[in-house]
Image (tube, rainbow, N blue to C red; front, side, top):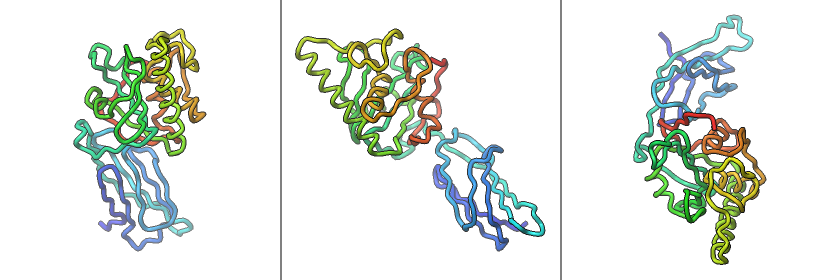
Length: 260
């Protein structure tokens, strides 16, 4: 049987090349029977599949001959394998100011999947977080976060400027907090209390609220909140399939058990 397409996979990127002489003008790419991309004309196309869950997926490439006497499309099917990234050594990691890390696991395994943890990356080595207890806000290494929370996802703002603005706020917020401590004012304090104003930075703080404040007050970008407190689960849902953010990494076991 004549082949019309050549599909090559390089990690989590697909290359689709037309190799037949048929005059195809329009192409549709289906993954697990859902249309995920369409292309017009051309001989070669590329598709990012990093958003797919690890495992085997059904891939179908369809070519259409517009205006042809025989309008029947040409379709070819393939098996697509997406590897899981359970070990950080599986993939090359890089970090940029404004990246957001969201984990569904916790050091206390009893609350894994129920609470989680998040932080905002400030450069290629450090992040700012509100991990609980005292100090309420701190700057620490990205590596310690990865070691403590291997089951996490990393999201990057499409706008580099927006990420830098969020980081600028987070860094100034940290400095203001340190100054408060020097002056004997322990504000804000860490708390998950639901009855607190999300936009008030000086009464209480927690991990995902810190990220929310950084983007809302620093970059004028507000994540949606469905209940009283803005949880890591809320942040994760906001970032998935968000046209303003790109998924850089997602552990296959990231999962929140409740809608908080």
